[in-house]
Amino acid sequence: MAVPSGRLALEASDLVKTYGPSGRGKEPVRALNGLNLAVPHGTVFGLLGPNGAGKSTTVKILTTLSRADSGDARVMGLDVVKSQNAVRLAIGYVSQKSGSDVDATGRENLVLQGRIYGLSRSAATRRAEELLDRFGLGEAANRIVRGYSGGMQRKLDVALGLVHRPQVLFLDEPTTGLDPEARADMWAEIEKLTGQDGLTVLLTTHYLEEADRLAGQLAIVDRGAVVVEGSPESLKASLRGDAIQIDLAGASLGSQAASLLSRLPGVREVVVDGAVVRCRVDSGATAVPAVLGLLDDGGVAVSSVTTSRPSLDDVYLRHTGRSFSAAELADESASRRAA
Ligand SMILES: Nc1ncnc2c1ncn2[C@@H]1O[C@H](COP(=O)(O)OP(=O)(O)OP(=O)(O)O)[C@@H](O)[C@H]1O
Image (cartoon, rainbow, N blue to C red):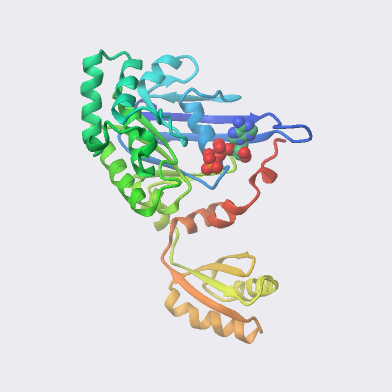
């Protein structure tokens, strides 16, 4: 891998994981299919992929909650199997499901977490106060968590993951289910995390916008493997030119439109997705009239055309051959049966 391993907070090499059949007549699922990862210290590293891509399974292996069938994984240079206890002390894990006791107060949850990690009562209380203050939960500290809003519960979850001052924090889809305001609030909190104490954050998400905004580096995961990695800017910059999306009057026109477009000079990467055709051109503004003229001459009815600068969706499309939203909708289990 490009970065020398001494400088990596997280490393995974060739991880394979297959889950056994979940019932009679069902087939095993190959969740990870040779996944590699190299996460430098002090960054927010995004694992971006559609539902079922293998993000949570990767996180579970790195956090010692699950074992890979084969391959190696290290956290701060420690092997996740051989040095399980040391890894657990080095990390904080905020899972998709809240780990707090909803019948206890926010303060009680934090103090208990500190005690579990071996802090004295007074040290645990001090740490709880620091974190309540840091996450703006001071006023709600003595209320039971059941009455917290979704955003407050998520902040408490992150605070719980930080009680023992870990070096690496895992955030597994931290904003799923939050309303836009609470999501923006959580983004601001996550941005603060790497600034303080050089924390490394591994963030899994299936929101393109979230990865784009928060991740210094990201890896796109598809069908159990990393298909491409880099900074959001470099990944987008690697796609030259603009994207054109053509919405056709009917899905039956897709292949005809694609074959016409492939003949137009300067048009690249033509992909059909139902009644939508996407392609890349050097300049959207100059290409659109020619594209529309060609389709019109060929008898292909168009309902709308949009051009856009490269996005992470385009990066995903380039490397997987399908759009992110189509992958989210696809029946992922059908496409990833274990061999
Ligand atoms: N305990 C399990 N038993 C059987 N199959 C599982 C289990 N956990 C995950 N899978 C399957 O493994 C694949 C990868 O799942 P995983 O949860 O790692 O993906 P993900 O990218 O985190 O998706 P999501 O965003 O939906 O959480 C999926 O097909 C999923 O259905």
